[in-house]
Length: 325
Ligand code: MLT
Image (cartoon, rainbow, N blue to C red):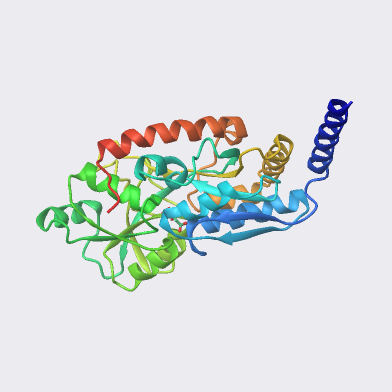
């Protein structure tokens, strides 16, 4: 009898959770962005949140939780209630390279999260100040070879994309550069504009307005092919300075482990519906953002991709001897 009562209670609990997921969402959602406002992760998150929010009929609040290259915000999201109202905007740094970079990480990108959907990818561009003597990646490499360690690269935090790509670039070019970490790309860009640092890799979506506004010069792209519309006469690194070099940031949305599959599916469907807005996707492409085949946005495909990226970055970090210093 006692067993029956307990079983009944479990059944009731399951039923109430199911109803809860069916009603979802009944209030606003929070997306944790683990970098300062105004950077590329924040810009992508706000843009996509705005479109998804219209589909699900509830506001999405962006919570900027910067620090330690995104790992502070990711750890917070991993510990959040899996109730379908808290999500993490993740990227290749803290959700891909993190386990290879940090001896002790307070979360596991694969085991502690449900992948919800992948965002489009964003290549990066190497930026220098307006009065910089470097007009190409070749100029900068030559200067770094002449005076090892003299060139400073600002980045969005240790383990951020800007940090990792600058480290990869230096490793492939065989040069020694000094990295200066900030709490996001926005403050790192400000110091580049102010002339406190020499160069930075930033994602095309936030770099473009700075270049078009005449505040910074773009001298190289990490995409394999040129972007004549967005960055006229800027050469890909692969074209001359570093044949075969290619890099882009991947981003995506994650939920704490055990978030209902129903919620994950509803979020993914809302995102796919939002992506049918051609005016929006055309605007993204105009910012250098690369749309992906639809299948790659799916939760299960994105979960597998995350796991594969964690393994790939172990090798990249090892081969390029990227160290957190
Ligand atoms: C990065 O380099 O990881 C991003 O640019 C961080 C940011 O969005 O500020």
